[in-house]
Amino acid sequence: MPIHLDYLNGGPLSPPVRAAIEEALVSCGNPSSLHAGGRAAAHLLRRARGQVAALAGARPDEVFFTAGGTESNAWALRGLAKPGSHLVVSAVEHLSVLQTAREMEKEGWSVTLVPVDAAGRVDPDQVGRALTPQTALVSIQWANPEVGTLQPVAEIARRVKPKGALFHTDAVAAAGRVPLDWAAVPADAVSLASGPLGGPPGAGALVLRRGTRIRPLFMGGTQEEGRRAGTENLLGIAGFGAAAEWAAGEMPSLQEKVLPLRDRLVRGILNIVSDAGFNGDPTDRLPGHLSVSFPGADAEALVLALDREGVSVGLGSACSAKAVKASHVLKAMGVGDPRALGTITLTYGRQTAAGEVDLFLEILPRALNVIGTRGE
Image 1 (cartoon, rainbow, N blue to C red):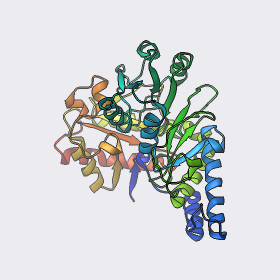
Image 2 (tube, rainbow, N blue to C red):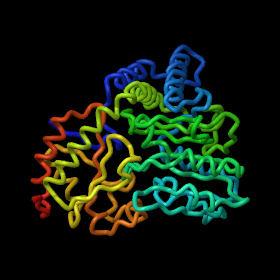
Image 3 (cartoon, rainbow, N blue to C red):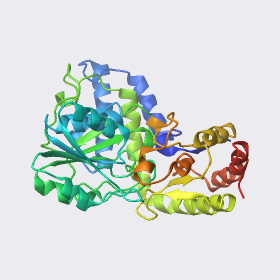
Image 4 (cartoon, helix red, strand yellow):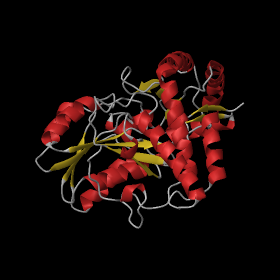
């Protein structure tokens, strides 16, 4: 039986998600059309918008659908920061933020990159010191998908808002795993994605606090209140909505479910490889997330060796998984190449059974042996 330990990059669809997609397949209309098929599609779109809004603690009219977290992040940066202004981002942001910021810098924006500590944590005081009268936008992720560290976004927002800058947070990894409290974290924009919630890939949202003005990234249509042109991906969005509702309902019991699995994994891995290292903040971290380094191992080879045994694990962020180089996140944390290049990510959740963890721990020594790194 396949063992899936890569839930943050997507995983098996839950029954409610499958049902929502099947319902959308029957409708198969264009939500902008006036006929019965269009009205049925528009109803599914409204329902999904409400489901995503409930997960984010927002209003339905604050949710704008996109093609995924990458688009949401790029839209937030380009749409919220007026041309020629100043941006502040952290060194461990998703590449969709970092690479967009780099391109914007070439086009005339100024960018400040805030460092992190050895746990991958941003210091709110450093963010505060980076602010200038020209700062238009600060973008700091809610949680890091590679090492699991939760950022002090509430404290950061309290530094940013009095200075008149907007605050965006990439909550793709955090949504459905920790509560997104807009009262405590007064963000102006929040990025979300379907896949990490257990929904279909290719759907996401940018949640904009009411009254926040943003320039469209795409032109040519009146969809999404004129802010994001293009016919909505109804199948993906319907599944996204169902996944958001399911994740919200399961979230209160998630910690209780996954903490024993994490302890089981840590003990088992250290019994196999005593010098294995674990990355990220040990306490302020995502539930169901483990970043583990096997010094001297080739992580890409290990992922493939585990895959041949029927085990799926993560290799850094999904968008950089094919790059044979040390993760920018681990480098920013001061992790050297020998350890960084031997790092894999295990993400598990509501559907993970203790027996799957035990089977993974049984398979791991064989996989390490295959790639030339023997467990003790």
